[in-house]
Length: 230
Image: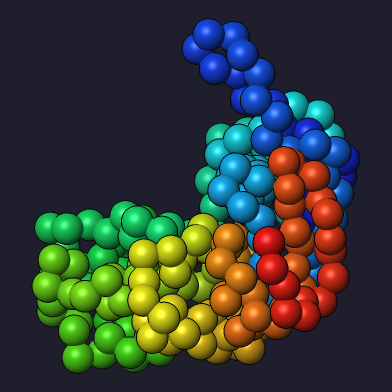
């Protein structure tokens, strides 16, 4: 479903200095997998997600989504690609002026769902993440854990094939972290592919899924997770 083929990504600073983010990275993620992109800060995890989403292009190599090369897509093709992907950010990126229902309905409206579908699906997705009783609450009325649940619901509500999550538990305590991880497990069990970037060994040890361990842009390990320290 997702394939990296000898991908190198180099960023250039305003002063002309080059920063190597990824170095000859190759891997493949199959439909329905949950894969953890792991490593310390600066290892290249976020760059991997941006390349999948088409926000960045590789300097060398190729990135494929369902057999199509992402960097060769035009604006319309990229728009179609992004409708197949839901993204969960560490800092939530919620619409503060909209309540829980409206945060989700806005996503559905922009991706072409009908009013009937919105009324039917939004409550179901909020129930899935445990926010059915917060449907009229605004983000500022939610706890950190609830905000992240809402961010997951927003990423999920348009029925994407893939969920990308960038350090989704980075701002949470251990209790909320485990609850969020259980939601990702549930989403994956429903058939959605999940790619989760994390530097937290507790996340890796709890989920025990396949890990792609990055260090200074290189893949050090690609295997089913055991207890790991990095």
